[in-house]
Image (tube, rainbow, N blue to C red):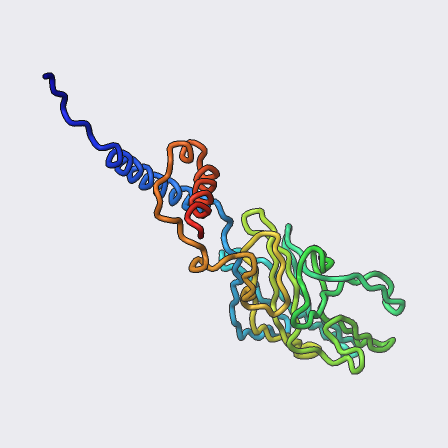
Length: 266
């Protein structure tokens, strides 16, 4: 009687195959997650720099918001007395190089014909973005004054409307470029008075292009809505996958897992 070699047990073959397929599926799934993670944009970050810089009469400060060695804005104090003593004028200014702009508005003055560009004195929490602010290139005054024969003129958003006294803890809003991309930032200053300059106490900028921030904001908000906690993401069931599921990619694998859960009563 002819004998035949014993056949392998199908169950063991299937178990072995399923185990290899499962290992491959987990590896492919992990690789897919890694690729997706790499494709995500960088997280937003606000870079804040504290400062204690006094800009005295006829002095200027070159502000480099992102520390790349390029002057983004120049804050300057002008004080011009006349030799006769009858004329005294000055201004606290912010100057924007080509491509950069400061949050500012135009004002018309009947006493001094012409339009003047004044930088906003923003309060803490005021949004700084393309949608929220008007920006202007060139030079904008924070304060401007003239004591002359015809009388005194005091102008500027950085002055109290009630007393013409300079304001403290207010913010300049900036729109500037890093490697050709638009970013937003702010600088906090105390205006010290006519001919007395200003005190720069800090500045910041948003690292994500075209994303605004608030005046005085030193870090991103804690709101992480829409980004699930990794610990809350369910782990894949330790069940063998099928060739059909692998052939359909992650979608087929998800359908297979759903079917397995239904069969097991989970």
